[in-house]
Image (cartoon, rainbow, N blue to C red; front, side, top):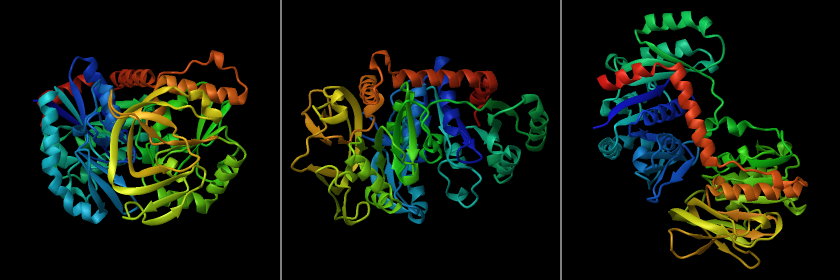
Length: 502
């Protein structure tokens, strides 16, 4: 049976996901079979496993740090917000349905058997499980029905390390206040504090650490510096989405949709030399990009209306008319078409005219497409002609079915399994391209061919271009993270906590 330890935080964005990944990496380096676990995650960044099941991207990142294949058992419940008051509920990788916040709050206790089933399966396979909480364990209006913080720690018998973000200020109050709002038996489960994102002189901080320990009777096990790492993070708080300025020769503009999903599709482009990626939320920020990406979204029709209302659609149409290249991914691809039809109110309901840049029509269906694929780009015209024949791997995750009309050529040929039937994906027309494939740029060869096309458009010499493998880049980041934790956290004490348990 696996030993367990849990990272909880005083707030969202305290660094729980990264600290969990760091511990996974350290335990793996020390020779243990280790897996991450988060009973309930709320995110629009999701991933399709090799079994065709959907899970949160943060647990995928942690599994990569642990050197193992991601499985839906690592994130048995995924909530994907559809609007401000409701979410699509995914259980064990499959869609259960859409629920309002109040409906889910009343229902979630029914999911404990699924949560514990997933946890027990991992427990049989691994030496150590590193659990991650969500938000704060001190949300007093939610504690009674908790299945992700102290409630989960209790079910798993996992001692807790409480992380606080000192960069935001008020870390001592947040750590002490969180403990104060816990029940006595919950406070006893907290075995250490971790102060995260520290900048400054540790000596100046030392008196505060002593007072915190005296006040809470919980030891401070580490002060982790503010780490500038390049790893997948939670969508709602990602600093990537705040990038506004181009600082390189080639400028890629990504439209930051209100319900943007799987923006991790773009991450591999950020490590390409001489290329900047920035996120655009208004027509004033659009500028004169060399390439535009319309990313995925959890609600295509509502986000298209947002584009229409804030003037960005007009900018995109003007840009396309001048020959500017645009790539739409998943929901972004659907927006580029002629018509969006939602007869069963899967997303928004009714019909809506698309942007009219690709001769396609999309009809939303209740069954979600979830599959991993491999494929190659077909012969296409325009700027991305250089990608013709380039292979890639990725995954599809969408609710709509898109029909190509006269004048549209498919963008790629894909197959769901080796040796399986090849089918067409996406559409292309001049400099406008669309695909359902997430993870398209994760392949080094694909990213390199894309960068070369951008270089040629800008008149740069592509001969010196050397793209970075995104997988190798991430693995280096995990090692840097682990090295920093070893230097700044009492790892020997964490092993002692693991051995003692609760």
